[in-house]
Amino acid sequence: MKPSPKRATIYFDPELHRALRLKAAETDQSISELVNAAVKLSLAEDAEDLAAFEERAHEPDLPFEEVLKDLRQRGKI
Image 1 (cartoon, rainbow, N blue to C red):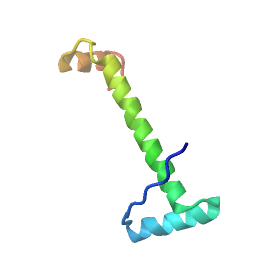
Image 2 (tube, helix red, strand yellow):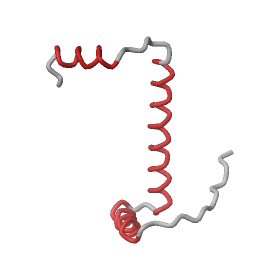
Image 3 (cartoon, one colour):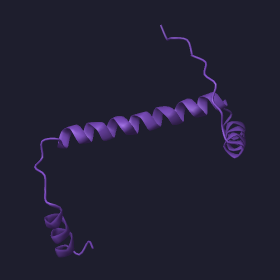
């Protein structure tokens, strides 16, 4: 069984609220649906970042000077 939605009061800048209202009208979605989707996306990106950090946690540290030297040699900077 899906849990019932929870209510929260959120204050938007007037310009952002107007943009959300317009987007909701254009997409035939509610502001709540748009905000929920945006928050889910943001949290998913955070989870991906944390997973990437965890994967690389045991990699050796590299001295900053070595990284700079490597980037210069490869023409990246």
